[in-house]
Image (cartoon, rainbow, N blue to C red; front, side):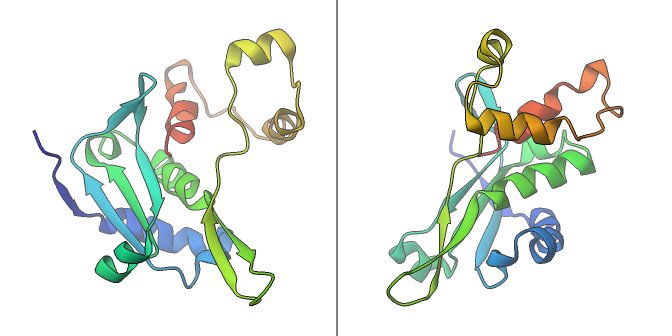
Length: 161
């Protein structure tokens, strides 16, 4: 069955609250926000959302530089904190880089800082600079709010591509 889509004003509202403080490079970016009906899977894990940089043709057609696509079924399962984290994660994938020739700011997509298996971390510790940096930040976070049932929080943020 074909996927259905609708405008995602709730996602846009969260993004608009985050961009001025955490993502100022995106202040002039044109971003389109849509819900798709059902979440996909990647490697057996739910993909809650994706962000895509539009080709020149798509920029012309939809007048947007980026498209954020959020799975409505997964969104409806999230509380406000997880929704904000998922949107923030997708926005964080965009970064600005100055063009050496024109001096113009170019927006590009990047991968998350860390991609690792928990079993490798358990066996070998923070074996590279990315993991060291990530664990340094993680050690400063107050995790007292977490309960045994909220282990999905890490998955939610990690798999929002």
